[in-house]
Amino acid sequence: MTERLSGDELFSLIRRVFRPAPHERGLAILVDLPDKEVPDTPSWRQRREIAADWAAELAARQASTGLETHLVLYRNVRTNNGDLPATAWVHSGGELPASADELDPATAVPFAEIYLTHPILIALTRFSATAPLKVAARSYPIRAATMPGFTPAMIPALRLDWGEINRRVEILADLLTRAEAAEIDFRHPGGTARLTLDLRYRHAHASGGLLPIPGVAGNLPSGEAYIVPYEGEREGDPSSSQGELPVQFETGEVVVYRIEHNRAVEVLGDGERARREAAAIVAEPAYANLAELGLGVLAELDIKPIGELLLDEKLGLHIAFGRSDHFGGQVGPAQFSSPEAVVHIDRVYIAETQPDVRVERVDLIMPKKKVVPLMRDQQYVIDWSR
Image 1: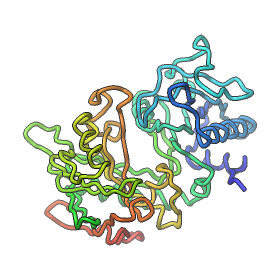
Image 2 (image 1 turned 90 degrees about the vertical axis):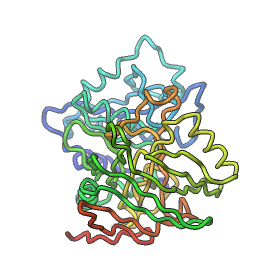
Image 3 (image 1 turned 30 degrees about the vertical axis):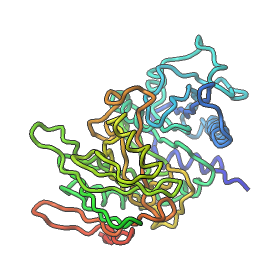
Image 4 (image 1 turned 180 degrees about the vertical axis):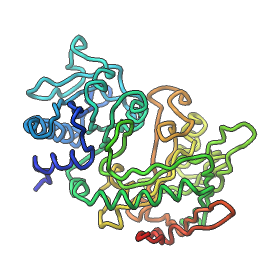
């Protein structure tokens, strides 16, 4: 039986996550549509159907929620975290279009109008809209829950105690903000690797699944603290992020990136994926940027991976390549060769996603060289009761 949120559960989720204020009257559920360039998939179609179901459930409860809910459609942007189109379509009801190519350009509305009339947004999309919605939230009075790749298997995570999750990620975010560096030791089939991430000059973010005030956007389900390593933008003060970062790909191949000044400058190995990655960091230098150190907490609350990044990255440590401006870093779309090339790619270090790469140790280096042990053998060793 497919898992489904009841109307009452959905209403409760909206109140718990967003805490709508009396003057907030609009809620938009965003979906991206396939087109002739990016064809449909069964999971993508199912996600749009979930979005339409949620929009209908919430519209039927407008008297209770005080929110006028609309389903908003837009043409997919072909890549995760690429900028959203300038326009979108407010669905008027009935059957969903199968493709963006079916939509009439004359009926499109500016995305800015959606932001001005819908202070609360939920993005149930194939391609992640987290980065552009974070950027939009700096200019418009919105807050957004982004759910790229959402599937019914994630619904149990929506029923968690978000107060406790938020408390834990606030602890982690405080530690990351005060830290000057993170030292990470890995073990992989080729031996061991150590990566040092420079955390100076940065403020960490707590994404605990609560979005009560305008100006923010974050994933749902959530449960992580994250920070952008210092990227060396201060004149005369280069980033000290350096070392080796092993990544196991879906084929099983383990690729090791050599990091200098927060960028992958070499790929070690002679396998097919190693050759592809070596070519990628030369062809698209912005992709080589280390864009995020993330610390998820949901594994300790008995949530299991399902093969979708939206949930799986919230289970433990993850490190991302590429775009960072939406998290407070310096690398954005302008640093990539084209809008279609913009990426923010997370590598998740849990047994199910990288079975041959183990995180043996994570220590945070605080001011005056104080060491705070954070993880041992992929498990947190900090005291959550503080």
